[in-house]
Amino acid sequence: MEITDNQISLRSELKRKMIHLFSSVIPFSYYLLERKTMLSILIAMFIAMLVIDVLRVKNQKVKYLYIKFLGDILRRHETEKEKIFFTGGTYLIFAFLICVLIFEKNIAILSMFILIFCDTTAAIVGRKKGKHFIGQKTIEGSLAFFFTGIIILFLVIGIADLKFLFAGTIALFVTTLFELIPLNSIKSFKIDDNITIPVFFGIAFTLISNSNFLI
Image (cartoon, rainbow, N blue to C red):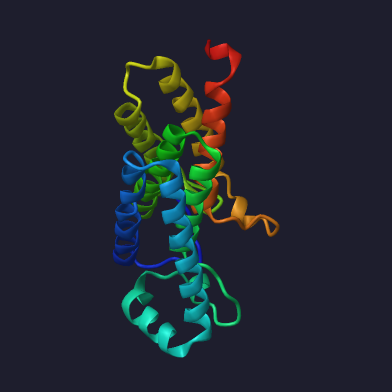
């Protein structure tokens, strides 16, 4: 869990994460929909989010309405005047789109769930209980991230497929370590964690589940 100068109040963080949790309707929907249909929906959503992001910077009326209804949950870089910075919601939809594009369906769904639920618990626990820091992140938040992921793995994969459960656990562990590394403190690395978390987990899970040592 990251603590930065863009920090918002705990109450606003909870509201932000509630929206985060609401996005779980997308991976749940993917269980029922074909890949082409899901891609069409996500592409449309992503384009809409891009248009809104541009308008809220360039158009004063849109900006006023955006700040009025969502201002308390926006981080400082999301309200930057001089540049068009995308909001966390735009990055979230883009991450979902990448997952559906490059991963097998079950891994894509699992990667989205990992982002939604693990990142949410990490943020809340890190804010309320975080005392041990690595850079701008907390050990407590990362532990919450990992154990939430374990619950998700058991719910989605179950104990019937021990090979993929084991692969998922390893992928989750390395993703937790990757998320803990303060990469955003490196000037040349500014990729939003809404993108890095699911993509890293999906790649790790794919490689590990297809590796020979699990056979």
